[in-house]
Amino acid sequence: MRATTKEELKQVLRALADPQASAPPTETCLNIAPQDLFDAVRHHGIEPAALPKLLEALPQEPPYVALIDGVRERQFLANAKCLNLEAHAKRIMLAIEGAGLQAKIVKGPVFTSALYEKASDRPFTDIDILAHPSAVRAIAPLLKDAGFFHSRRWIWDKSRSHMEQKWVLLEDPAIVIELHGNLVHNAGLRRHISFGFDEYMTVAGGGDFPAAAHFMTAVIHASASHKFNRLQLLVDVLQAVRRLEDRDVEHLDQVLDQLGARLEALVCLDLVDALFDNFTATQAQEKLSGRRDYRRCRRLVTADAVFDTWNDRGHRSSMRRNTFRLAQHVVPRS
Image (tube, rainbow, N blue to C red; front, side, top):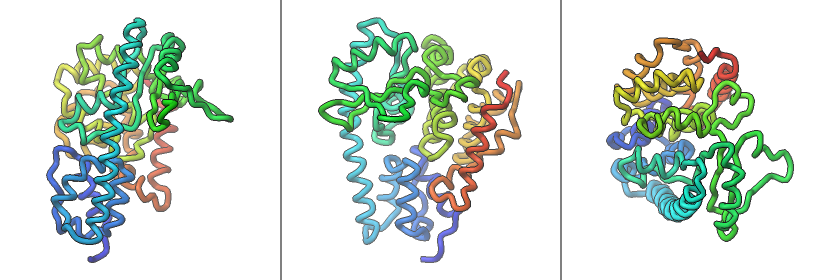
């Protein structure tokens, strides 16, 4: 096996990450050091979509057999956990709705059912409930009644400033519900871009534009919560983009400045276009960048910066993504 090039690894990761792409060529996969390939796949959170393609592309011989078995075991456990999480989520949402409180489940099972053809391509590790700030306090006793406790740090607890509470099931600490007042957790950034329950309902158009709401939830999660630190975040955006219709893009153009999130939407579309060569993303870019295109800021985060989060030699990826976070605090929003 000759030395792996970065471009070969990127080519393989692109194909493995995209649920609708074919398996990468066997020859290219074999040119990559096995442990490097599987470590990068795991870091980027793309094992679920990658597993069937790895089975197709790689020979059933050492060391691949053991590495694939590890992926298969992790996915079996992840899928079993999802079923458990969904059961608790349904019970809690029935209680929330019965109390007439304003809250919705976002990400997780919503993305799985709305954006992915196979549920196994998008397992989730917790349940995210986005609640109106006035409903957060009233939801707490409902979670306690369901057997959860509010998990706080002993010191430097930031659940209040982050508007995010972690509720853990007493009988199984692996079952976690995150109760959000806002999906933008950085309090300083939240002064410039906010995505709480009201903003979610604005982009959803009261339920008329669910695809736009899923797209913006994925955009905020990738750009304002995690700074593009793994491919899986942008696969969610890719899948949401694939479900956008012209009417959704027109609606987004009308509400993005109200949300203060045009920059984040455009950067995510740039990355989806660069990573996956998606035509819908290219079209949406053109329609959404007319009022303010943020061209200089959009150059800060590149496809390479996302790929290189796996092995950030020289910290170039980190520097680019942190500089983008700084830009998010200073660019004009309307």
